[in-house]
Length: 382
Image 1: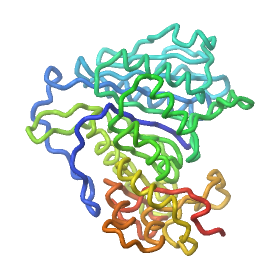
Image 2: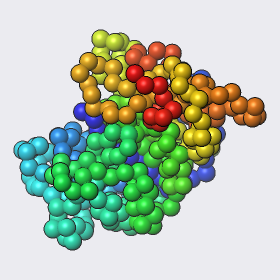
Image 3: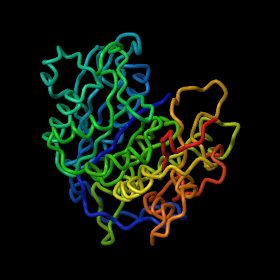
Image 4: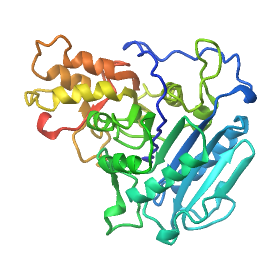
């Protein structure tokens, strides 16, 4: 299944960059992590699951509820879920079967429905690809919690757009684009986020990271396929600062936690006989650095001989991806040599804070590869 989640967090002071060829280290023990001393934070989850991803998302809500038992009183999750007939016949963790959109709040005391009239304007049947619906939820979620805020968007994606709503076949709101996402966040009054993570197929592209730089400091995403995120592990993990005190659960360190737990989720990613794991590739991206790469790369057209890592479908008959996806580090190296002090490859190296890739991506270098690019006029044709 090609799930989708976007994590976004109000910006905190940026930490130092990870060394390009090293894995993210395990966090130091949290010495001061009792609930009463933990800093506040809030996770917003936009469940665009009016499609065949609904059963998976219901399972993830169950995981979130279980993880929240260890939350402090000032930590919570606010979840938007849109359901339709034909995808799940069970209420799952939501206590009752329904169609349409609802919002729930999850904390250490359990889960409850909130915002009963939030989508009355759409008769409680909003389109998940409608930027106004997304903005309405984000604005509501920001008011429910305390900073820093993290945002997650779940659904389907293809690199150019996400938030697929199967009930909107003839509507412009069937999908949401990255420019629409950016406009919606501004409309909701959101400040620049710290981490934006996509659990969405193919969204880990250079052009997306560059475009999102004004609204998020970092991005976690997959250039090829996405697998269901391990929410229990991600939400239960946390990091400590240099003083040993707990960092905000959904602060900048959330990106480090997410990429580390995703890597742990695919222990057989180097086994080609386990293709679903072997096709995984994830990266934690510095969007400001990605924007600098894009500014230099987008005017180049000398990459016809590009022969680096290719994130296009590798399994016979798998034709979900409709654009040529390649790796930005390899494409930067194939572009014309620059006399500038900082080469394109070095800039990509700076942008990729941490990454991992499966066996299908031969030559994958953690911390360098993992940021995709889809620029048809810059890539070779086959």
